Image (cartoon, rainbow, N blue to C red):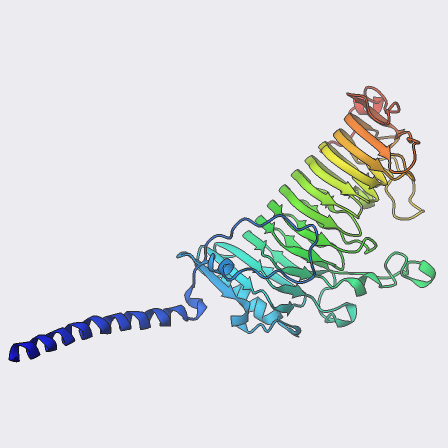
Length: 475
């Protein structure tokens, strides 16, 4: 009997010893799970974004809980803006909280930092410049909604009215997420200085600054993917002085009559890829300014809007150089223009090495247009200098055009004609009726490699004497 008691006591001590360490380990893990995130909870690279939706709602899509768990990885850090005091009620000014989150993440030693704008919240931010360089890569993951103050009267007087969110001197950043950036532009569009918004449909004189929603300046290795952005007061995205830009699967929307709401504008920027996106607005879906080269635009659905444009270039007698541009595999619909090159008289420089291929037009007013007489008023004077337009290829462009304008228009400078315009597999038919309008050409040199609809008989052969004499300002 005594041996039974000894055996029972021994077994009890064994199970007690086994149970206590288990409880201690369990308690330790619970504490670690709630550690303040400055001690670097971890993330993994984000999954590839889904293609931009064809009919996005105004509410930010809520990711599943596992989406943010995918960002946990032993070498990366997560920074939730709410931990820095952001409220996200759509009313409170959360600017300082975002600045704190940015500064902390930017200086973190982790290889990749993720600033999280969580789903289910709407954050109001004033005009702000987020400055680099940062240590390592940085992701701004917008799953909720970002908004500026609502209109000019709500804009702080000391803040710039030319820009809202600026990213300056950043190398290696991704702006991504399933959320919404709402520019709240309606009150800006109705200012009397905007076209046709003044008394009796006029445009009132005076300053008319309106903010660009998202601007990247002097930055490199940038990715923008998966986001929805709507109703910017002016341009939705602008890239100035940037290198290696990849825009993927974004959805941009604004009313067709919203002024100057270009979807994506690039200036002095090279190595650009804009893919798989939907843009509908009141101006150019994509506009390519001076100093851009090596740009590839693919699988864009554009319109309503003003099409995809190179320019305007050469304003105020400036010199502009644009080269190696490709626009392909895209749809342009119900737009004022299709693929366009526009330059002011008096400019210098050149546009060269441009290919527009495999583009479908739906009820577009000017499907193919080169306009070297671009002017926003009726009092532009004639000038002899111009940006030289050469080596432009149009291939496999088909669809319908608005019968108010000819389907092709090549209006080139008398003194600096367009050269080496090449057309093949062009088929553009009127969206109403059976009358096919003739293309328009002026000082345009080039050829049709195949039969086109309508036929293009107005292009001049060879090269003009002025070009042969090398009097052109080549870039």
